[in-house]
Length: 245
Image 1 (spheres, rainbow, N blue to C red):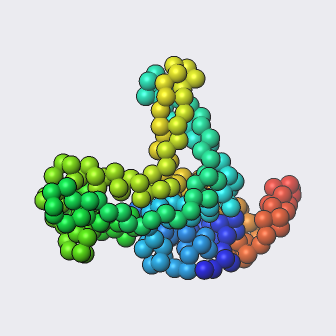
Image 2 (image 1 turned 90 degrees about the vertical axis):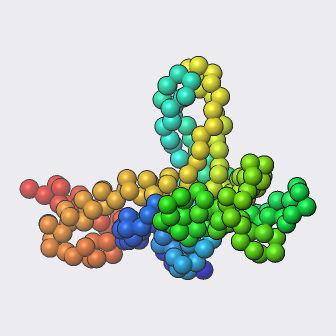
Image 3 (image 1 turned 45 degrees about the vertical axis):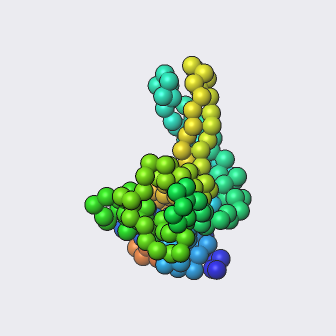
């Protein structure tokens, strides 16, 4: 596993932003893990269980931007806008759990095996006419490995499959419990870790691009020359440009 890349580096940040911008949202986490140095390649990241992806992305976020994320959510009880702190450090420490779970058959038939989806599963499902059914067909099999037709599952079986899938999701299904100070309403806030990292990266990029553009215009340097500088040196040149007559 590579450890040389860091999203704290401006060049790595821009490369991660550029590559993640070109893929569907469900694959962005895999791209960021690769660009951030936590997996060797995107193919490997796409095949990680979503629970593992979310935990690793949480680790990448905390390594780069700190342990907590400040988010704004709306209270469903009174509409009040609340600022909440999401403790991603906890999710980053979530150990790898089981990848599969067995749903016992209730009628003497074959047990079902539920597998935690991967980003690749999400990509394939998103390209189908019925993503939910496609995802179920990819991630649920008979105990012997045979395929399962989603339409053949009754409501009880579907409920059991959904419960097993939620248990396997781990950090990918994180929920923050909080209480509205205005009305006292208790609520759960879904934590989409890859989306949080992507939003933070997207918010950092304009400032980096502006610095590159400013120094390139002032000194005629190429983007690569500017990004190769340390943040300290780049800031020193920016102060020079902004204070000279």
